[in-house]
Every structure is written in structure tokens, then in C-alpha cells.
Image (cartoon, rainbow, N blue to C red; front, side):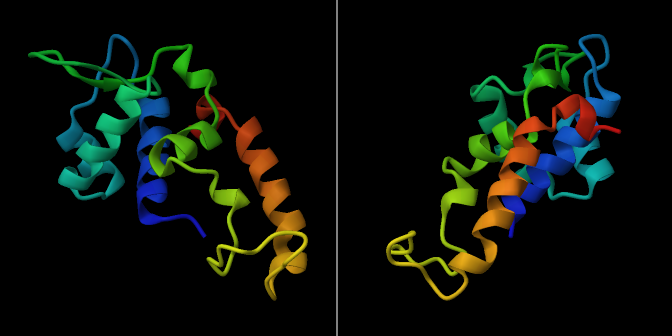
Length: 132
């Protein structure tokens, strides 16, 4: 249900939440190895998250990526929105553009409640909690 980009972003976020801090930054290459994600792909994801303020980074000899205490209060769903640029839970499971309550697809009534519950859960799950 989640794209590879979103899966990689959440894996990296969980690792950063558990292992990084303002005083302990993690290089993209080390992060990629630890979460088993291609470094080039992960770097693009990290750039997007950094540009949107969800991850911090510092360049230089002691540089790398990290979360501030404030960023750890963002939700897993914030990360999903940042990398997807859309509400993935609001889209049709069959990728039909005209699917809605008035014109439902074959799966709509079977999964709309589950998608809503999952979205609420991800909105309440902080990055700090994701690290546990």
C-alpha cells in the first residue's frame, strides 16, 4: 500500500529517531547501509525531508542528518505527506480517478474505514514513538 519511497523514508526516519541527535549526526552513506536502502535514492528522500523541515542536516567534518527534539514530535504521516506530496490515504485503492462516495470503485466500501483508521493512527504516531 505504501510506495517504496515512503517505505524508505519511514525506515530512515525510524533509524534517525533512534540513533541521531544534534550532537550525533549520521552520514547518508551510513544511514543507507543501516537501513538497507540505495544511497542515491535515500539521498533524494533526505533532501526532500530536509527542505520541508522534517529532518535537519549539517555539512562538514562533523556533518550528517539528525532530528531535533521538535522534529521528533512530527508524525509518521507528516513524513508520508512530505515524500508523496499527496494524501495517499485519500486516493482510490484501485487508482481510479473518479472513485468517491458517490461513484465508488469495487473496493471502496470494503477499505474506506480501514484507510481512515490507518491514517488516524499514522497521524498520532510521532517519529519519537516510531523509533521504539
